[in-house]
Image (cartoon, rainbow over all chains, first blue to last red; front, side, top):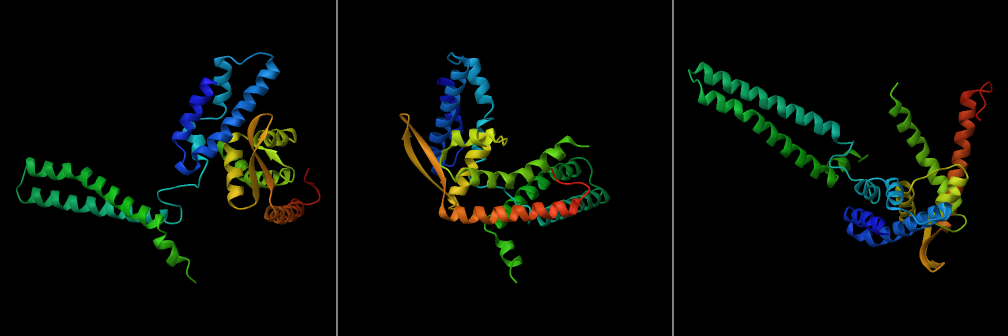
Length: 153
Length: 114
């Protein structure tokens, strides 16, 4: 049972700590039952290839583990539209401000380094906005800060 | 047409039915492996990645009771419908009958539901 053990070890890594022992014990029992059933049907011991085919039916360890425990998402479907709206608005405003800065620099007679530096900042600022807004909304969602108010009568 | 579309709608339709089937099958005691086989024998294939998380969820919700017990020199986790589970199962079956009856009416007499 070498391959099944390695598979279960991999599943274990992705499970929440509190559920590990129990889930693995149960999955291991199931795997053993399946191996025994196949061996009885074939009338011989399973080869490594047989075991690998059997385990493949269980799917990727991380995906199998992911199905245990509650569903987790960074930003849930309820506040996603608001998140998306704020993110788009922030990015558009960021681009507009940068556009204005570039125009102002050019109009002010600046060339070369100053203008290209301003342009180079655009993706950096966009990335920071994306990170910051995502962080704020994931915290809002995690602690249900918006939903609670919305669900009040 | 997108073949994944049918698949995702099918899963959605199946999800609720699986819960009812698992609860109904656990009116008699089973451990995971025999439960899966019993359901498969009745035409309902359910893979491990669906069954075990579902069993855990139903147990957390108090609809199932489980215990580890030795059988054939191996420890197995046996599940059985709890008293709460029995009540819920009955309600779900009533609901299912009523949905089925409504669907039959929606479809009309010319196309009976198989």
